[in-house]
Length: 187
Image (cartoon, rainbow, N blue to C red; front, top):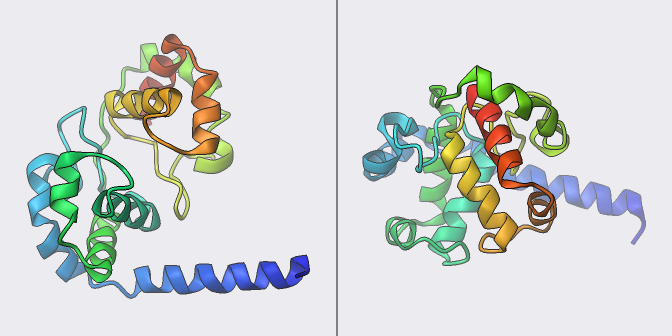
């Protein structure tokens, strides 16, 4: 199959996937998401530095992650219990709801975050110049630094799987991770 046909097919499949997210019912998503508020905060704005902020996150990323938890492909006992009863439609609705919410900035101390700016340049290729993510690539800006640091360490040890992220995290020292995540949280 030539490259042009593969590109057209890939675009078509992505369009179908994204159109199902855009057709999601945000009101139904809010009702299903209410059980998430205990950990992830009202409207997905977690105040717990170990729990990610979901408000304003990329819908496609949320769909992928909630589905992975539901299908036990990403391991977290609490998330498995919360996601196991969700249908694909429920997941699309919940993802659309959280993506539609306005995020609150996590934390970030600008005096300690500035060294992380140089390290963040390697993240902008996938996560975008403003670190707002795109499609199935998550938004990093304004996220809790402690949560981001834990995820980078999980990628580094292989506890969380993703070839590109594992390769990038493998080259980060603990100091690099702290500086990088402080910078991202301050955005």
